[in-house]
Image (cartoon, rainbow, N blue to C red; front, side):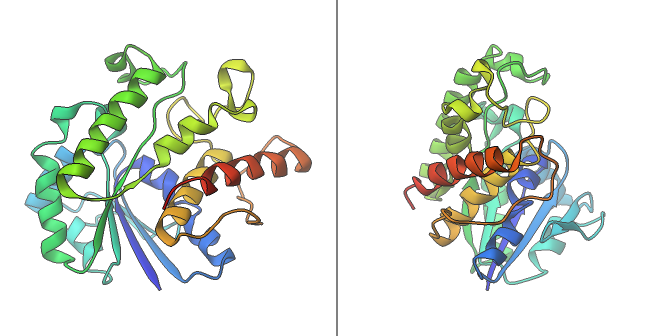
Amino acid sequence: MIRVLAIGNSFSTDCTQYLFPMAKHFVIPMTVGNLYIGGCSLERHYKNLSQNLPEYEYFENGKSLGNSYTILDAIKRFEWDIVTIQQASGDSGIRESYYPYAGFLVEFIKTHAPKAKIYINQTWAYERDSAHPDFPRYNNSQELMYKMLCDCYSELSKLFDFPIIPVGDVIQGLRGTPEFDYEKTGRSLCRDGYHLDLFYGRYAASAVWLRFLTGKKIKGCTFVPDAFCRDGDKTRRHCLEVINSTVDGINV
């Protein structure tokens, strides 16, 4: 049994929504927890844990178990094998937004879940035409945002010696394929300019997590999300194969 807890926000929800059923397809016993507050930054996580505030909605295996959870409530729920941290998307490329808050969160996890390995979930850059209010901080440039968030997550990883789950890298890589080149009439991997598409985007992110956390190759996976997709069966299968091939290229 692999037990994984994400301390995150809506982007961790995107990443973990299909992780449990995808693991189930490969007969990998897994429990997936996700602490959610929309747009929650490392600074807010720190404030919440320092006051033990019950402000989170807690998801387990993709289903909500209710609101009013604290970080400590979730950490004490199981003996977690892996706990992930991440920055809020708008702050992801802003170096000073990470410190000292990441350090406090890391120490809290080490104190209350000493056996857990800590991973960094790399979030992704916004879509090119995103109307997110934080996009101007990156000159409304997807490439600039991607570079800046990569730099910040890389620094965080080196500082604490934590591995990075490279969701942002894979999303950006997929944007270079004909199927998902939004600038050239391909499909956007975002549903609103920043959250991931409920079908392809969330599938890709969960596949990255499964590949990275288990080492399992995704090729041949027959799991198909329940979310609505406008593409026909043949096109859907092809696009999922493109995602699987890209994800399998990750070095783990």
